[in-house]
Image (tube, helix red, strand yellow):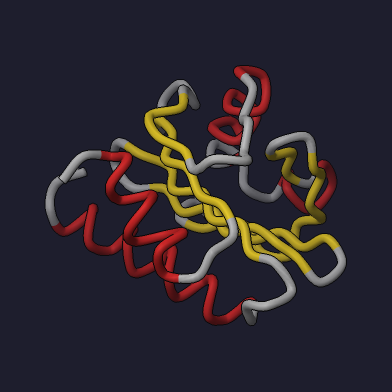
Length: 126
């Protein structure tokens, strides 16, 4: 399965409004859904957050021009919120999965979608 298929089928196909997969080391965009534009500085910032996840509480997470307030930050998962929308970021060995949800999806459901894909990729060496 290609990285784009993971985004299309496992993220947006599962109900998230937007999704992307980035390189864990450099934050480069490997695949993304339409409507999300993660710039190089944003990708760098997302990758840097996983080096010091506690920074998400002070800095938030900037994704596609939207700043999300940090509500969870650990070496594997970072969650953010902006009003009724939010983001779930999950790091695997080689990738960072980005899931964006809107007000039609419960935060717990969004987290389950992204964390499940993260577990699958980790189990398969990614």
